[in-house]
Image 1: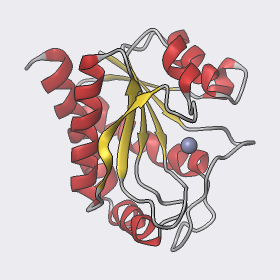
Image 2 (image 1 turned 135 degrees about the vertical axis):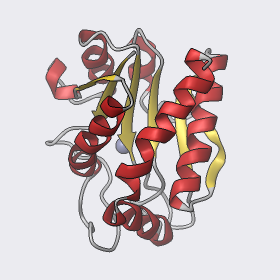
Image 3 (image 1 turned 90 degrees about the vertical axis):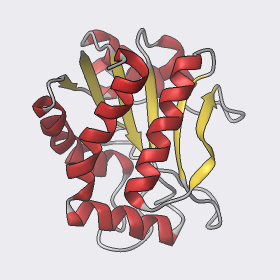
Length: 195
Ligand SMILES: [Zn+2]
């Protein structure tokens, strides 16, 4: 199985930035670009064909270029990594999936559960967020991709200090890179490959 790993957004349009701690001011794109190679290495060791790509590889910075980039590398599954920002009270982990996919919903929920377990965060809502969302966030990435496509909203590290500290801790301790490949693998095996 070929997995595409993408950072959310783009260097010139970073999205949210970490609100506190060691990585304060680091944007979504920047942080994901740093840790994605670590996740790719772990997933390759588990036998996956991993391709790193991003929106600008397909020529733009908006979500439809995420789909184009993932389509261009022939991915069977695509994960784009983000973190959220809203009011300081909002918190938790969620994974976004295309609304019409019942399987995608299960995968999103399983992944959100396990990411929350790794970080010690709560789930935002029930953890699986159907796209299109009411604010139409990211829709074109899901509409135009030809494979199951997910946005992992790790937590509200852009606006909630507790979430930001939990994510920071997982990154600095190495838990994120150590455990995320196995978590992704387990979700894939349970939901897509049935083994
Ligand atoms: Zn984002």
